Structures are given as structure tokens and as C-alpha cells.
Image (cartoon, rainbow over all chains, first blue to last red; front, side, top):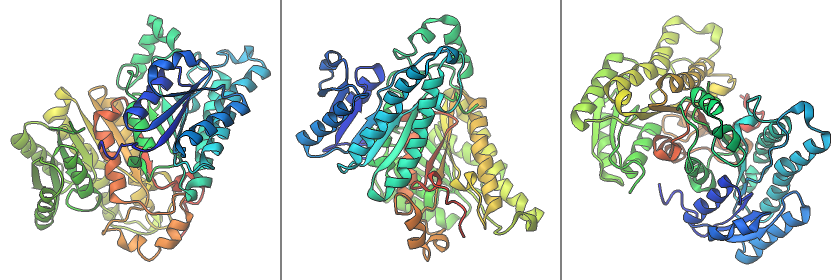
Length: 242
Length: 256
């Protein structure tokens, strides 16, 4: 299994790497042998990761191009892309402006699309789009319209790119986490009632723990999943299987 | 340390094809394996092959028909006697006695298909639950099919039982959680000996339509089974992992 999951000699880019999940993704890929370029706006929070750091605002086209060029120029390859950067948007649909909605899509959907293009044209093999269970089901009053739409869009994008680029050897899959403790879910988990609501409605009766996306990430990034493309891997303790 | 070190796994239909491939991969990942199948000679050959492969785990072979609840009970009892635990159950055995339209299907063959493919999954899961998993936890991996998601000109009823397996995977995940995780794998066309008639002559046609331009291998399914059986998937339950080279990502499923 270890060899199967090996990323020795591969180059990987992780966006949104200053967040909890993104930082974890970067270090997990690095520990499997990949040369990792961690991209985020807040680079001061990336130094401790021990991987290559690129300052990048994924909503800025020039930044995306620079990120891809940096990874490719330094290692001569760009095998794995983890589109993890995301913003939450407004919770209440009635209060969200069209501009705010569009800005969420710019980060959560347009940027992953463009980065995927930049990666595929450099010989990439595995794209992992970090979606969410909120791209599959509503979790009102949590979640949000732009966020849910962007994540559902990312899942559609995953299938379409898989269909178009499979012949070129590019696999494209989505990873849909359920309720993990992250900056975005801090309020949810710190409220006892909401936290109990998560436990009660999850088949495994708890929220996700740090590290419980490691296996899914490595499976999708590595040759262990060499026949898997266009899929959504849901890691949610059974939330959406109800 | 390997991901299934010291675990004990029962695999129905474990003497050939995908089931044998899963047994091989589990053993390479550190597990002891119990292979169950109907034919004694096939089991003996499979056991010998497994023991020549990678890994140090023990191999127990048990003659059993997946459609007989008594056989499930006995195989699980043998497993407990021999190993004292049962951490992983792979419901892999399946039968397909009928090809053709639903309206022409006779009751005996419908009942046989349901008995092995659907009720077998329940019977084996129940035996494993009572013998070990209800107290100590475990994982169940059901080998369904992408046929459970799509329409097919030939094997519609077989596929209906695979669709039932996918829903029962969710239902069992709900009923057996949080102690036991239950997930499914839905393979596309896999190059097994048994399915040779399905793929051999048509391989170029079939692969040309697939985004990944090739058919699946037993190893593709076995790798996913190791992942779902191990702690690497500790927060996944009720899911179906589709391994089809992208086939169901495209609207080309029905094509004879």
C-alpha cells in the first residue's frame, strides 16, 4: 500500500495551503514523496510547513499563471493539482449580493478551472478538486447559496474535465469532505447544540478528525486510483448516505 | 507497518477474478484472508497461489455458497475458530443466470439472482456482525457494479440487484454505524477471465469510448478495496467508489 501510494518524484501544487485542510494536504503529499508547492495569500503561515511556498491569490489570473510556472520551472513537471482554496460566502441567501456571489465563484470555481488548464497543458496526471458535501446537499441554516453553487459547479467541472482529458492521461476527481473542524466550521463546532446536531446526523456519530482526509487524498493523487476519474469521493462519516 | 497488519478478512467469491485479486492485495497489505467459494478445487488452487504471493498472512479456504445463509454462518464460525477475529468482510460473490429483457425474466432465475447478490450480502453481514463486528467494530466492502447506476441492453436484472447493493450499503452504514463502516465499490468492465466473453472481442470499441482509454484490471479494484478496508478511510461510510475509467462521467452508458 505504501508503494502504491508513493508520490516519489512527483510535483504537486496545493492552493489555499494556509488553511487547516490545505496545510495538511501539503504536508501529506510531501510525506508521500512529492515536491510540494503550497500556495496561499498568507505566506507567513506557510513557512512552518517545510515545503515550497508561493504567494498566490487564486482569484488573480496573473498569480495563477505564476504559480504554475514556478512549480514547472523549478522541477520540470506539474503532476498533481489540489484545488483547495475556497471562500465561504454569505450564509443567508437573501442577504447575499450578486457581486459577492460572483466573487465566491471566482475563487471556488473559476480559479480551479484555470489552474486545471495550466496543469493539464504541462503534462499533469491527477487533479483533485476539493468540493464539499454542500455541493451535494443543503445544510441550511449552515452553508450558503454561493458556496453550495460553487461546490456543485466544481463537481460538474470535475466530471466534464474527466470526460475531455481522460484520453490525454489526466484524471480529475473531487474530494467532498463533510463536517471537519476548520476555520470555516469553527462557529459550528464551538456551539454545543450545532455540534450535537452534527454527531446525531452522522452515521459514525462524530465530526471528521484531522488526518481523516489523508487516505482519500493519497488514493486520488497516486497510482492507487489509476482507473478512477470523474468521481466524487465523499468523506463525511455517512452524512450524505442517509 | 502495513495498513491491514494482523487483520482478518473474509472474501466471498474469493477463489478467482476480483475476489482473488482482493485476497492477494489484502495479504500483501498484512492481512490473513479467508476465501469462500463453491468449488473445492478452485479454492485449493487459489489458496496455493495466494501463499506463493506477497505477504505472510495465513489463508483459510471454505467451501460455501454465498446464497446460503447457513454457509455464511459456518464460514464465519470457521473464521472465528481459526483466527479468533473478523475485521473485514468483502461481499464479492455474485451470480448472473439471466440475460435479456426484464419482462421475459422467469421467477426461479430472478429468485436466484436476488438470493446470491442481495440476500447474500445481508446474510454474510449479519453473521460477521454477530460473531465479531458488533462488539469490536470492522469494515464491510460490497462489490457492486456501475451496472447498478445505469441501463443496459442485456443484464438489466443483474444490474437491479447491484443497485440494491448500493442502497443497502447506505442502509447498512446507517444501521451498523458507528461501530462498522460499510462502503461499496462499483467497477466498470474489468478484465477478468470470467468476463472474457464480455470484453475480449470488443476491447478496442469499449476502450475508445472511455476517458481513460482502457478497461479496468483486478488490481484497480483490489487497491480500492484495501483503501476502504483500512483505517485510511476511517471517516468514509455509506459511499460507493466508482472505478470505471470515467465511463459513467459520460452519457454513453447505454450502447449495445
